[in-house]
Length: 276
Ligand SMILES: [Zn+2]
Ligand SMILES: [Zn+2]
Picture 1 (cartoon, rainbow, N blue to C red):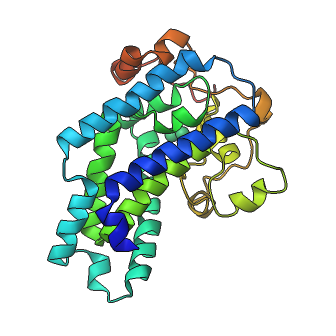
Picture 2 (cartoon, rainbow, N blue to C red):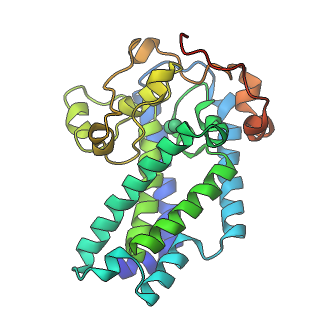
Picture 3 (cartoon, rainbow, N blue to C red):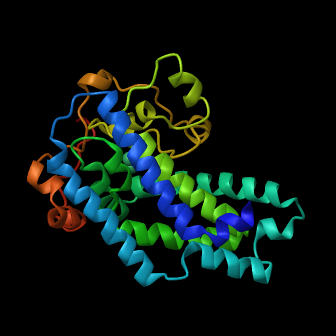
């Protein structure tokens, strides 16, 4: 199994991306959670162009990618997990959970450090939330997170199969938990006890600052509960809540590729007032 995912990495990755995208698009059509504020055609061209652009940039800048780093680290026997003798499947599982914790901490960091927030706010400036938001990240944020991932793989000795499985999983869950889909009310809490659901991540995309600074997890819902950043529901409710960030409300600015890429470089908005 682990050799299979490493050998067929590109195919596994593309099939998972296309498969999950198709499933979520159909689900959004059949059972939408909230009415859209903008038509798909206003947002999708730019959101999908970002995916293509990011793929090109990452392939050009880091042809060996995270898998290459993991294979090199494994060959050298570097990192924490390689130092502890454990069955391969335990190391893969531990690697996936550790990467998920690092992604959670990295997300906190991108909200806490002003220069990193400038990059990350492009993701939050989407005026609606759906499956395409899950892949809408600024190229510089993508490159920075890749460097953080390389360092994590080297320091912790994450096995190559765990790296590929985690990347495929993160891609799939990110599309899932950004989707505008309705999940049966009896099922949602059960799912949420383990995984980040669309209702849980939607709170993070609220225009209210305290709600934006909650629910940072992408895969396991555990980290937010453990570190006290968990918020069950938005105050205004899922139907009435506003998606986005207060400083970026213009449709053209938030939904066209070039102005989206410029969002980090926009002049800093007026200083925040705590009383607001
Ligand atoms: Zn965020
Ligand atoms: Zn998000």
